Length: 269
Image (tube, rainbow, N blue to C red; front, top):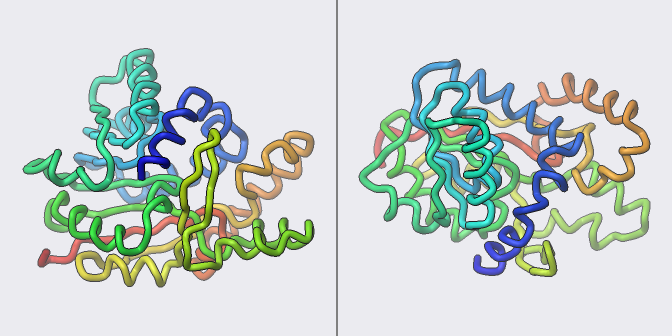
């Protein structure tokens, strides 16, 4: 976890340029926001965001008049988020530097209506750690609370096809492996795990009921292909429109770059 934290600390300053504000990043995020609007339905809610990064989602949620506590293990990310909060003059969001495994201990007895994790933060922890976190997340929710997570899917069609045609079979199938995959950001190496809908449902099933799963980006490619599509913006727009159809089909969830899952807290924790 320390290497992961250090990697994102180093990446914090340029993170919005390299992902948040890219065309691909924006397309995927807008689709997430549209989904959240349907889940939250503008009702009053206390939201806990984990792995909030530079605060883009937390600030959007706050502007929708939700009360938001946004956390990240990387202090560098929180620093960027705080500066955006000040510039935007947004008061109903509280940024905190807390890693996953200290959330319950640090925030108790506070509870929330809704827990949110965007764009693969939970891919940075393995199955055993997720199983441990499941109980902590359950304790942080009010009865009937919901948890929405966006994770990197296990069988991404784009990634498999892209590396297959480049004759890089190891990379083409890297998400399919149940082991941690070496990942490097800013010269810091850490492991990433990729999950299927079935796998995550099994991990969280003791405390949560899975009520929905949908793909986020089937036709829209992973963000590391942004440079290629900078020269082909019209093609990328067509892919985004195509995803308006594809993302309705739940069975495609495992084959998208990111997938979105909604869990509801069971009555007994």
